[in-house]
Each structure stands twice: as structure tokens, then as C-alpha cells.
Length: 215
Image (cartoon, rainbow, N blue to C red):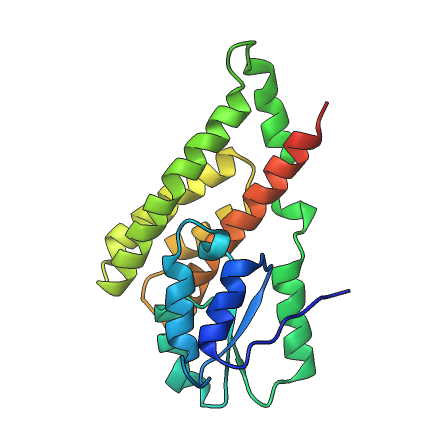
């Protein structure tokens, strides 16, 4: 089942985030005291917690075209328009609360394991390096999208695709391939880009979880 907490306003929503660990946040854009945009910015700015990766889904009664850009600008990952359609809600829950094993090709990592030594775990070294490097690549992608620098955007997407595929993060690599092939910027590009951080985090969690269970 799913356990939920409800905050009456954005300020209390941020307080809940700071005191608990959540897998998904639904954020009403028009809450009292502190609106959903400000609350999301505060959550995303808290780099010491996992909040940089928790998917945040906007809830708004306004038109999709009106609110979408602002939602993604402050760091939200997805958007649901009120009144909420039950099927759309279920799709969002399935999207962010499940991690398909097919998103990671573990055979890629298994092929690297024989190259590890007593002094160095090659797979863990590559994972650590990826975790160090990917935030910088995401930042470049975000800046290139904002500045409409298509060449830099495509090149960076290619670089992130390559290092992701090298670790078997195939779903992430497929998203990066899609971004690499982009020839014009659009709301769909922005949506894909905003979801990438969560997809990477989910895939890495899946990889490190399986690796820690191996004997």
C-alpha cells in the first residue's frame, strides 16, 4: 500500500519534507502561506538531502500551457491538471514509484567484474565516478536548454548517454539519445530534461541495491 501525509500549506509541506523521507511529492501550486513554486525551490535547494532527486508532481487548476513552464523552471518533474483524472494519476504513480529491472542491463556490469582486483573494485569505482560527474552534465544540459544552445545541448546529451550506457543504465541512455537527437527546443524537451535527474537516481539506487546484496 501507499502511506501519505498531507500538508495544509507550502510551509508545512517543506517542514514535512525536512523531517521525513518521501518517494514522491504532489505539490499544489496555489497553496496558502507558501505556494507550491516556492516550496519546490526550497526543497530543491536543500542539497544535503535526497530532495534533489525526489520527484515532485505539480497540481494546478490552471491551463497546462500556462503553468507548465514555471513548474519545470522551479524543479518539478511532472504536471497534473485539476480536476485530476484517475487514470492519469495512476500512470504517474506507476511511473515514479516503480523501477523496472529492464531499465538497467546488469550484464554490462557483470562483464566488468573480472577486471576488478583485491585493491580496486572496478564497478564500484565507475559508479562512484558516474555519481561525481553526472550532476555537472545535467547542469550543462539545463544551461544549454535555457540559452537555446543546441550544439552544446546535443553534445552533452551524447556524453551522458555514453557514460550511462557504459554502466548499463539503458533507460537513462535512451532518454539521452532522445535529447541528443533534438533539433529544436520545446516543452517536451524541457519535460524530458526535468525527469532525467530522477531517472538517474532511480537507476543508480537499483544498481547499488543489487550490488550490496551480492555475496
